[in-house]
Image (cartoon, rainbow, N blue to C red; front, top):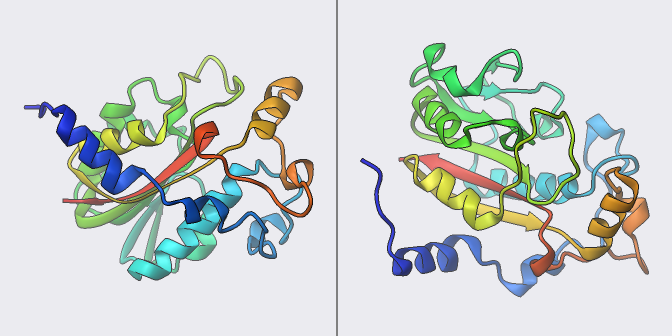
Length: 229
């Protein structure tokens, strides 16, 4: 039976797992050299929020020693985040053709790490998909995903909306996961350019005096590292 969360529960979840300290929003205002091999070590031409998601995940993998899962699932082999892992076994389950709403019919209690990015907005029932992913994972296994909060329509009609950081936390908590880390990025300049051009702005378009700000109140994408209880 689904649990009912009190206002106090939700405030605690927000305070402990979602709310970021001020230092988080400035730590990569000045970007390091691009570490992403799949992008030829260049930020140019790539949707900027993916940069912060990559840098966060790189930091979290080192923090929690997640580089070498026994069995890892990936829904897209081209994800730049794949370079951060050295799995002993890698199972590719591309979406599509695999339907994440039914993925547990193919796999049960198998994965130590499940990586899927930029996918939740394309799932008509994200709650069921996360429940299914939970079933595919071993106890104590980790999952990482990123999702837009604000975005232009794409892959329509298979595009159903966005998720903010608190919504992302509750989606996973409600399906038996423990939140380990949540990250976010956004700024108003990105939002203006996104809707003015209907293209995803890259770092070269957002740099101002050598910096790219991350504005807490203008979140555009968010991501989560969670663990199966």
